Image (cartoon, rainbow over all chains, first blue to last red; front, top):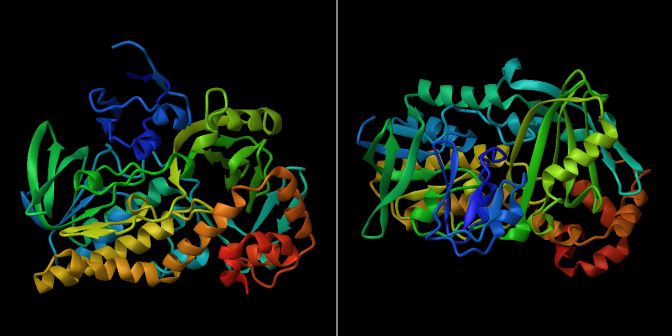
Length: 59
Length: 399
């Protein structure tokens, strides 16, 4: 699953624009990941300008 | 908040604001919803715009919108040689660094004064689709989920646009065509007031550039954009920016950090559907070379508001009728520039540092009567005929 490091994320939305599944969203100024929709392509992890997203093995 | 309007606008940036203003001035009932709690904050932008471009929208500029007037630019090549565009040669490329916190709020203010309603912290969570036509949005606002129906919905929700996706349009930006950006607002730094600075090169900003946009005395937006494919652990936009700042402004003070994505891809294949118009960054109309998007958002926003008014008055909101919007912006100066600049970007993004040095050194003594991105590139190509040989697709723009 994709984990958001909230202390690093500044909710810019760069990850949302590249997610091919539309699995990311800003809700109430927080980035939210729909893990059921996410296909773990990790494009969002790669594109984050601040390194706020992490791919994790945890379910 | 009513349950029905003529026009519903998703997003309260410059595109949404101009659309709302144009539609309201034509007597339509208009609702703007913005998911963030405030208009104009946080701003995700280097805030630069050409004087000729902004003047298209206003007879007079409010001084509080402007942080600094820009009169020249410096382009720094990978070998640190400098190409200086003096005010005399800057011609039509002089401009402003805006204060978008004020600017964006005033644009919405103008739309509201014209009659539009605006709701912040109001988030579209889905589209209302009936018989394939968009009829508004499902909106979360003040702890409630409600339907807002509209004859025409305008998606102005920026690069991270989700509304068009809810309508079944794929707006995904390809990884290699997303510039991942970080920017500090810095103070106490040695800068030349009125001069913007651009650094290019794979060491400084792979497949992108680093910028310094003055905001006043010893204050500037210092930012960077790199290609999504070049971004990885330890080599992210912020890492490159921090490295630059450590070397060049070690004593500088950071008072704001913003981050974001800028699309450098082609615009969406079609920017309308039945009952839907897509504008600004959501339509992928930011400039693929510079990343600039304020003018393009305002232009497409205003046009969307005007076409929406025309269609609503005629009672026809079909895709066919709304195509006038798509056709008009594509055939405009802006649309043609987007098409050309995308082709140019595709070539320049592949150049290595040696090629960039050679190209920028070739133009270092250049004097141009007028400056624009196009005239500069035209001169670069003229002085580097080998480049043109590789760029058969670009020949038509330079012959």
